[in-house]
Structure formats: structure tokens, C-alpha cells
Amino acid sequence: MKTTRNWLIAYIALYIASLYLFPLTSRILTLSLILAMLIEVPTGFFKNERARRLAALLTGVGLVVIVVYLLSSSIPMIISNISSFGNEIDRILEGERFNRLMARLPESVAVSVKDFLGSLNNVMIGFALDTARKVAASASSWLTGAVLLIIGSVYLLRNKKNFSEKIVPVVFPGCDRESLRDFLGGFNRDLQNYVFQRTIIALSVGTTIGAGAFLLGIPHPLFFAILGAITNYIPYVGVVMTGIPFLLVGNAAHGFWGVFGVIAILLVAGVIDGWVMTPMLMSKRLRMNWFIILVAVIAIGELLGIFGMIIGIPALLFIKRFWSDFVMGRSDGILE
Image (cartoon, rainbow, N blue to C red):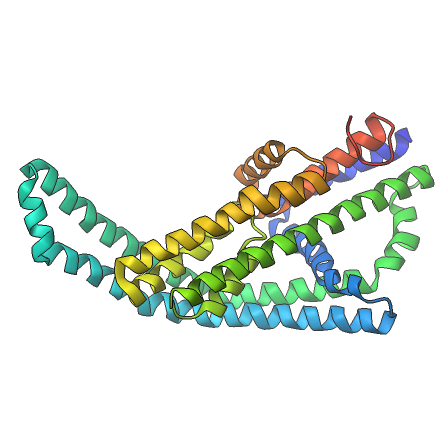
């Protein structure tokens, strides 16, 4: 038991070191593991082995198609809608009603309001252009990384049995096989449960955003539904990544009323995610306090950026399982 614990601590130390020594390789391998579990989600609905393999294959191909679709659609969408945002602010600044309102205010306040709107215009246009340039410059790298992730995930899925039967005994010499098997099996179930729950939340958020865009007559509702679902796998940050192009398109379609409509949709999606689905599924099913989840995601995100926010909850699950099995002597992953 003690030997198993020491080996796990040593490997965790090596993994943390690899995040800084080999950042790209370690991140791709980590995301491949999570993606492999995501690909496995649809296989849980089938009992036949051939049907399970076909479901995993179709899911993997579907994810590649989705990534290509999002990258090819986002760049022209952002660029084509940037000018409309600036034109809307210019129209407001030059409008007779706005000027009458400014005339009623003290001169210093009116100047401040105009300066703020002008600065907001410049900041939004500059930010959107910079984002579009970065996306365009990194599109090929992201596509290559996505393909590598899919290949790595498929490899892990195909060799999962060999890993547990042949590799684990080699890299954990002298360990208690039963305690090691219980720990790795329990952590794997925790991860699968997390990925499944996160997928349900992502689909709910994506459906809410897509339905809201359709009802308000905002173009490309399917694009925003898919984008909202995919980015929801990044806790607390995904809604911002979806919101930038969503706000631009909403403004281009309906002016500032479109912006207000988009904000309302994002607020509803945020409530469903943060106050309904996450507490109901994550906190209860994973048996972790929502505040601890929030702190863990923010803390690890502060260290490792967006990648840290993605692995924040899996890292917390590992710590929870390790503490339960090797400190408290339990095998059910419950801390009491």
C-alpha cells in the first residue's frame, strides 16, 4: 500500500514537471485521455462490441468535422461583423436623440459618455481584429493539434486493455496489485462520470444558445449551438469564448437590441450551467462541494491557463480519490 502511494506521488511529480519541461506533449497526451473518454460516451448506449466501435469511430470523425467547421466559419464571421459594431456606435454618437440627451447633461458627463463609447468602439474592433488574426494564424496548428488529439484518443481506446494488463505492472513494480487496481479503476470511473455529466451540461447549454439565437432571428444558430457546447468543456470561460462572435453577429442582425438579446441568452445559459446543471449533476454525482470545484478550477487555471481550467476538476477528482484510498483507507472515493 505504501509502495503504491509513493509510486503515484512520484509519477504525479514527474507529470507536473513535464507540464513545464514538455508543455505541448504533456498537454496533448492529457487532452487525448479526456477526449478518449468523451468519444466513449456514446458507446455506453450499446452492448454489442461492433456497435460500440462504430459509435466511437463516428464520434471521433464527427469531432474532427466539428472542429473544421468551427474554424472555417468563425474567422470570416468575426471579420464580416466587426464593421457593423463600429457603425452602430457611430450612428448612436451622430444621432439627434443621443445629442439631445447629451445636451441635458453636464458638459463633463457628456464628454465622458462620448469618450467611453468611442473607446469602447475602438477596443471592441481592435480586440475582434486581433482575435481574428490570431485564429487565422493558429488555425492550421489547431487543426493539426485536433487531429493529433483524435489519433491519440483512438490509440488509447484501442490499447486500453493492454495498458491495464501489461504496462501498469511494469511501471508500478513492487506495488500491491489489488490496491492499485482499485485506485486506477475508481479514478477511471470518476473521470468517465465527470465527462458524461459535463457532456450533458454542454448539450444543454448548446441547445439553449442555439434555440435562443433561432427564436431571436440571429443568423447561424447551429454554429453558436455547437460553439456553446464545445466551449462549455472549459468551465466558466467557455461562455466568454462563445459570447464574442455571438455579440458581433447579434449586433449586425438587430443592432443594440440584438446585443441585449444575446446577453439575455448568455445569462440564461449561464444560469442553466452554473446554478442548475452543475450543482445538480457535478456536485451531487461527483460528491464534491461546488465552491471547492470553483476554487480548484480558478487556482489551476491561474497556474496553467485555459488548459488548467480544463483539467481542474479531473485533478480534483484525482486528489479526492488518492486521499480516500491511501490516506483514509477507503475504496469508494468518499471523503467523510
